[in-house]
Every structure is written in structure tokens, then in C-alpha cells.
Length: 148
Image 1 (cartoon, rainbow, N blue to C red):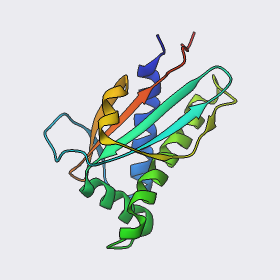
Image 2 (cartoon, rainbow, N blue to C red):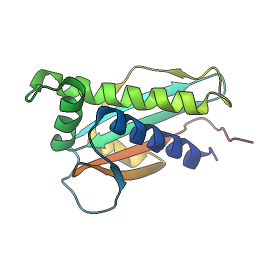
Image 3 (cartoon, rainbow, N blue to C red):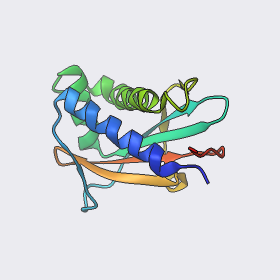
Image 4 (cartoon, one colour):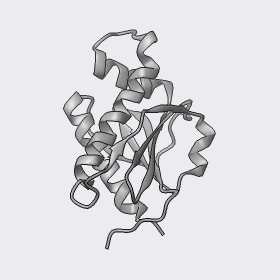
């Protein structure tokens, strides 16, 4: 079984660092009821021994929060999808840095849009709240790998 808990922990740490760097507020681990998700993006991290999918799902309010943090525009409508993909790309870069010692040839794929229903196919997830917006960060490893 892949060590998804470690990969998820690396993703959460990277998301916390990214949110702090963007000044969007503190990340709170939460299972409270929020607006349902209506947006999702995914990113593949891969090497010769591992393929890892990382995903971020959120609601419209969360997408606007990320877009404003990245662009400082009040209504960046044309940038909403790109902003969420860029945020996940930054999180993926942080994961790559965290995992570099054990996986030095880890590379990032291109962020892509996911259907909200895709959340069901991920093995581990963490519910996060940033400035009152719900985010679900999820990981899955189609290939077997474990830290030893």
C-alpha cells in the first residue's frame, strides 16, 4: 500500500505554507459543513518509481479567494480556473521540495481541471478551511510505493 498519509501530510504542509505566503489567512483543519464543492483541479507528480495524483477541490468562494490572493484583482473572472490550477502547482512544487530527499527525480505534470465527482477516486483527503472557504486536498498513488 502506498504511503498516502505521508504524501497527504506533505501536501497539507505545502498548502499551509502557500496560503501563508499569499496572505490568505490561516489554514484550519476542519470537518465542518461548508458550501459544496463546484471546482476541482489535479496535478500529477511522477518519477521512475512513483506516480502520485494530487487534487484540490473547493467552492466558488474558495476559487475567488485564491484568484484574489494570486492576482489582487477584485473580479478576475477570466483568471478563476487558471488561479486554482496555479495554486495547486505551487502546492505541488512544495511537495516536490519536501519529498526531494527520498524522490530526487520527482517531476510535476501540468495542472488540469477535474470533475467534482472525481473526489471519490482519491485514497486520502484532508478537509481544510481558509478564510471561511472549504478546500479538500486529496492524494492517490496508482503505482505502489512506500517509504522504507
